[in-house]
Image 1 (cartoon, helix red, strand yellow):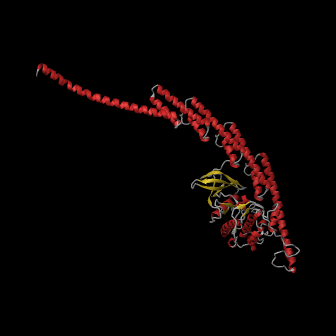
Image 2 (cartoon, one colour):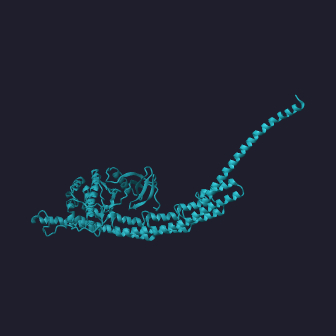
Length: 580
């Protein structure tokens, strides 16, 4: 897949928000309703399993009616056959962006209540999310939390499994003990995952996250619920139940959890803003010692006669867990190492994002599907990003040197610099390239404007005149001194042409030159004065013409009267001389 912005009928795409191993998400405007949406698009149309799962995700989310679950607007296919989901755009980021921060207790409680409310609707529909983690908790602009990414959700009424990666699905750092061991799941697994998130928000740390996959799995299977510091003790009882290793000891459902959360009395809670982390000291409960010694806070002492069966059961459970985890770890490490090797090879070959299923980006993303915190894959994706940005900048520089500033639209300097900035808005090479591109465009317009003046194309043709090119410059740079001076020069050329027309007594031409000059510079003082003088002369001329017309009319009227009297005078003279 290339790096051009995707074309989605009915949507104006603004940029890519993110990309995973199976799909990418774009920010767009739904044209029919003029609202911002997030559009999730599958990377490929070829994998029927992913297609089925993607459609299922759309149907699942569309069936849920609660403010705590993201809203789906549309599901459809692109011209190339790939499916997409248009959903609510949630601008407040995700909870993962606050990793390591300590939330005020009231704010942490508020978020957990909102997510538990959403999960109650999910579970009552017979569904399990199976991947409740900070990255899948988004925030609206008003701060309310919503659940997203139902890509691996499971219908508890359906036995068929749509998601087989050869490992337990979900994110290990937030997975329940039964999920890490590939056991049968129900809604209580999501409650456990939410409990890990709750603990992390309160303390700034996830104590179950180990140095590697095996350690993380074993922590979930064996590590008890940490003991909270005194000022957080009000949450201990709820967390003990949410994080119980045995699902039967957890809350039966989210309604029961919400009832318990509502019963928490914070007294005088602090402000609900996120605070920087100074890690809260928590004490992790350990697996009961094999000596049978009573641990502090235990309710009763197990009779000695029952210790051997209990120890045997514990030993078998730990051994089984270790065996499963060890096998999973070996399998995953082998798969991860192979994927990382392929990714590095493609990176060295310059296959950054294409071919789609055989690129550095693809293999690094596949690693993160297995281990979402894999440092090598995360650093590799950053190198892929940097290489893509650098590649776009190089192409932009080449097109700039070739004079291909804006055209063709998908193979020009402007196009490549903007593609680089779409990946990294702070890319210095792209920002510098756009500045040089701007300067080149301005220089080109100035040269054309000067040639137009030499050719006496001052104001016309509309798209090939000095004024046109100067105004193109000002559209790019409103205070460009050369363009402003150029427009003044054109206005003064029209002033000189008007004066020349006056000298030749060509008053209509003079007026035309004045009007053109004012079209270029409406506030030009001398042209305005000439316009007023011309109007005064026109008024005087009209008055003189009117006076002449009136005099001529009077003269024309007097002449017939004189000719009418002349015969009477002759008659009187005749009569006087000759009589009648």
